[in-house]
Length: 326
Image 1 (cartoon, rainbow, N blue to C red):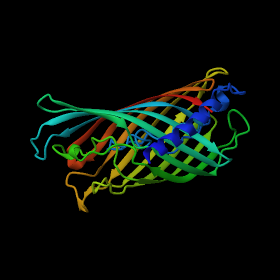
Image 2 (cartoon, rainbow, N blue to C red):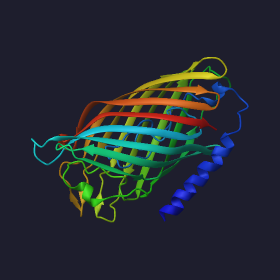
Image 3 (cartoon, one colour):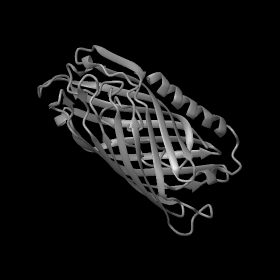
């Protein structure tokens, strides 16, 4: 089943790579729209997801694209259940093949296929490494309100509203043994479960300024090991401005805040202690466009957090991507 899912995703992405290889008939500034996309820079304390839920499903701009993205997440967690248990450093690393493609006039499809390589170092200097495919995600969004600017810089405000959702598939490996010895059960390649995402995104732009607000909710199910990660609620507010540097270059700095809330995990139907919580992040990013190519950088730092009863801490998150706009 996983093989068929992966093959289908790669075929879809490959078709659009071939389409994207054609030189666009319009310059760079025509490929950039000032509307932040859904799920911009959202992260999951369950680093095992490694899909769009970590650092977002879109680039932060309303581009259609295919590309590669690296995501680095840094945590520390208690190596044990006691208040004086030592801290351990955990690094979650993900490389994604990802795309956003239009289907018709108002439907947008997002697809993400991640490869993960995680590591952690214990107090006794021993290390653990895991690597492999993560959980693939496919989402569809319908544009209820769609921007229709008639010039490079719109004279009046333009509004967008998108509603939709999708599914995260258990293509990543879940291992029970990684639940032992640490209060962070998220040191996994995948959740092992079929999870479902609902989301909404609103954006408004005026001239070369933009503002967006979004929410999404992930419903998580139990896997075949009777483990269920807690449902997740995300929200964000972002602002940005695009600077046009000639006909081929554009620069778009972005800033905002984002929040996450996690319900408690469950095992065999019982709540798992020291799971769940919430976090608030500040975020800075920038995207540079040259013709149909886009290079983006983004970082997130915690402003406030209470994860796993204070026994897991997010240190930082960083992403870099290289896309071909289509």
